[in-house]
Image (cartoon, rainbow, N blue to C red; front, side):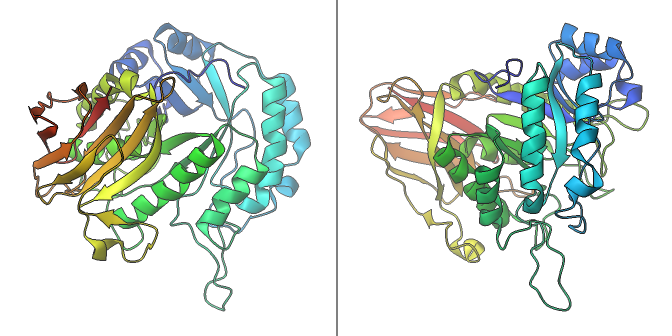
Length: 412
C-alpha cells in the first residue's frame, strides 16, 4: 500500500515537531537523536519537508484533514455528521505532495462506532495520495467502557471490551497495522505493568493472527512535573515492545504536545530527555536489523509474581520456559519477558528477545542471571547496549542482563 515508509527495518519515530523546532539545526538534531519519522507534523512551509528529506526523516502530516480525536467518547458515532466526507474529498484534491510525506493522519483514538467512516477515509487516502498510507491510532485498554448504569455511561471504545474493540477494527478498517499508545508512567490502578502486558497481549495476538504490523507508542515524557523518566524506564517500554513484535516505535513527545519533560522545551531547546532518547534509539537501531529478520510467534512471561497478574487470566507466568529449540529458560528470580521468534525466510532459524522486566520504576535495579539449555551449536547474543557475554558449558548457556535491558539471542 505505502511505498515510502520502510517495511524492512525497525522504524523509530516521535510525536510533534513544533514550529520553533523546524529549522535545519533542529531537524539535524532530530535525525541525530535516532528519529526517522515525525508524527503529527504541521510544517511551516515546504522547506521543512525538504529538510526532512535531506536528513532521511519521514513525516505523517496532521492538518491535511479535519482533526478527529475520540476524547471522552461523547462524540462517538458522529464523525460522519460532524466532519462530512466532502471535507476530506476537498482536502485530498488540494493537497500538494512531497517525498518526505510518509502518511496522512486521519484520526486518533476513535470509537469503534466510527470505524466504518474511517475506513472510507482510509480508502480515499490510499487512492488519492502518493504516499498511500492513512495513519490511525487506537485507544489503549484503559479507555472507558460504559457499564450502562446511572453513574458510568460514557463508552470511549464503542464496544463491550477492549478485545472486541480490536476485533472490530480488524473487521472494519482496511489498514496493514495496528497502532496504539500505552502510557505507563506514573503507575496507577489503571496504568500498571499488568494492564500494559494485557494490552500488549491482545494487540500482538491480533497482529499475529491477521498478519498486520504492530506499531507502539511509549512515552519519553511524564505526567508529573517533578519526575522525568530515566533511560531504564525508556528501555523498559522499548524492549517490551520488541518482545511483543513491534516494528514501529513512536515516542511521545519530542516537542511539547502533552505533559511534561518532553525532549525539547517550549523554546525548542534540548532537555535532559534528549540524551536519554538518543541512547535508547541507538540501542534499538543497533538491534533492529537482526531483529527484523525474524517475526514473533509468541510472547512468554517467566518469573513474574502471579498475584500481580491475577486480574488478567490470559497472562500466565512460569518459572521456566521450554519452546523446542530452548529448554529450561529461567532466571535467578528476576521477571523476564521473552519474545519467541522465527526467521522470516528460514524456518529452521529461531530467536528469543529477552527483557529483564524486574524493575519498571528504575528504583531497585537488579541484574538478572539467565540460564537456558539449547542443542543449537550456533547461539549469538545481540545487544544494543553493553555486550552480553554467553557462558557455555555443553548445551547449557548462561548470561547476565541488567535491569530493563534487552538482548536478542539467535539460534542456528
